[in-house]
Every structure is written in structure tokens, then in C-alpha cells.
Length: 381
Image 1 (cartoon, helix red, strand yellow):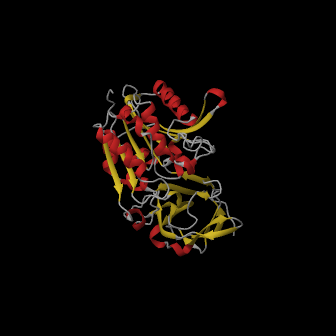
Image 2: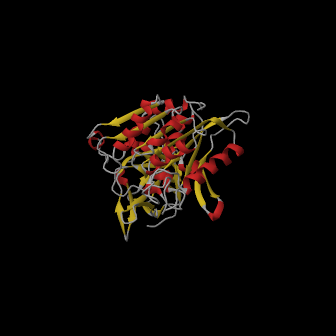
Image 3: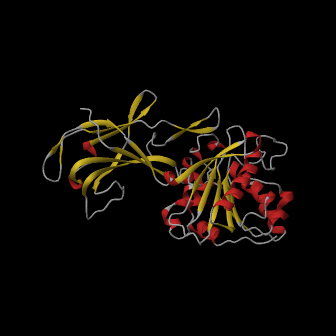
């Protein structure tokens, strides 16, 4: 039977990107989760014109809609169905190969309790089928949404994370994340959902130790942070979107209690090029940078000699040649630059099931990278 219930889908941004990782069903009475098994429920997601089964890996109950399992109290009005993030259709976006863009997909789920179950008092709760009523995006929902309107009617959507319980008299770092080519668009969402490049800094475990602002702008679909796509003969100059990001940073410095000596920038692939371009053309602005599988102008490395940089690339990257990072690191090393470099050997990422281009996964998973970044403060050239 079809019945209306309060049912939330929960998403999480992991190394795979944003996936629907759980379902939360609110019941009118308390349920004993220890009596439930995955076979009692069904979760299906709509793909094209048909519904495809998702894999339920665990079922438990809670006294709130939090998806954390408490083995000492497996009871409550909320029943949580954990889903396998590796399911084929678990992601909230799909790759459009023709446009080389990741695009958000419509989230349409059917959730069913397929057999009668009993609540904690022994009363029978009848089967039901209904669609989700809410979508709770963990961490992503904590980013506010804005659009910056620059000169010549040029607009950049961006998302901003503001640290919780920020003290008015204190100042906090700002981390700027530049996404790759696949997250270009105007939806102001995919740059947070495609990977952990932005959300990792806003994760509660890092915010507890290093509260900070996080800026995640979105590049228009036919443009790039540097002139990589718009002027291939001169690919390392800052593009109009990147120049607009600089204006957004300046705006935020005036509006929020951001420590101007602790403005950091990181980016991957197209955003790696953007990170090098931003530091080389605005070296006075940034305290440190983490460019990942990008490239830049070796003739400008003297501009960033004083900036702490930790670069990452994979030896067998098939999209951006590893030499693009090697040349910059060698040039900086020759002049005594403050540079660190991690190169993942051939086969390292593929052995973990990842494309060799995805060196950002290993970079952002590394807790030492997080700690290193927040240790840096702006130095004078």
C-alpha cells in the first residue's frame, strides 16, 4: 500500500563524490532496531524510466534522525537504512562525456517497508511504499549559496562555509577551492558534490581543530580558471573567472572576520592550473597553496618563491602530464623556493580502484596535508 511518511534521504561526500548513503524513516512510535533486517525494506532509485534497487547494508533505530549507530540504544522512532555507496547509481550526479561535465541528477527514490513489523510495544506497523520527503546533504547544506556579479555583467556562483560559533573578536583562515573542468556550470552545487576538495575543510573533525571559512566558486561551463581552454597558446594566464574569484576573496576579507595572513588556495586539474595562476599573479594574497595535477608558467616561479607550496601529481596521470608539476617544482627548488612535492608512483591509484588522474583523493585524505596547510602564515616576498 502507498502511505505518506516522513522519509529523508541522506547524502555524504566521500572520495567517490556525493552519494545517497542512508534513508531515515520516521515512525509514529518507538521501534526496536535489533528486530529489523535489511530484507524488511526496499530502496529503489529512478534511472531513466525505471526504478533500480539500492543495496541496504545495515538497519538500526535511533531516537533522532542522526545516522550514527549506537549499539547500546538500538531503539527510537527513526529507522535508518544504510546504503552501499558503491552501488552503480548511488551518486547524485552523472558524467556527460560529450560536454565533459558532471551534471546533477534528479533524486527520485521509492522506499518500502515490505513486511509488517512490530513497534517496541508489540503493535503491528503495516507495510508501505512512498517517495522521499526530504534530502539532507551532510556538510553541503552548511555552505551558503551566493552569486557574485562582476563587471561586464560577468557572474560567478559560489558557496561559502562559515565556521560555527565563530567569535566576533577572533579571526579565522580562509580556504579557497578551485574545482576541475568537470564541475563547471551554473548550478552552484556540483563543485561541492564532485569530490572532497571543498567539503574536506568543512568536515566536523577538521573544523573542531581548525575552524575556517571555505570558499568554493563555480567556473562557467565554457570557461576555465586559467586561459587553459580559452587561449591554448598562452594557457597559464588567469582567466576572467579567476580574476572574479580574486574579487570575491577581497569582498570576503572586508565582510567577515577572516585572517588576511592565512588565506589558502587549493585546486585540482583545471583548478590546479588555476591555483598556480592565482599564486603567481597575486602572490601577496596567499599564505600557502596545494596545487594538484595542474601546471603553470615556469617563468613566474620567482613570484612565489616565498609561498609554501605542496604540489601533488601521479606519475601515470593520463589527463595532465606529470611533467607539468615536475618542471615547476624543479624550477622552484633551483631558486630556493618553499616547495614540497608528492608524486604517486605508477599504478598506486589504479591499485586502489581510482583513475591515475585522481591524485586529489590521496592528497585530501592525508591528515598531514591538512595540518601542514593550517600551520602556514603569509610571508613577505
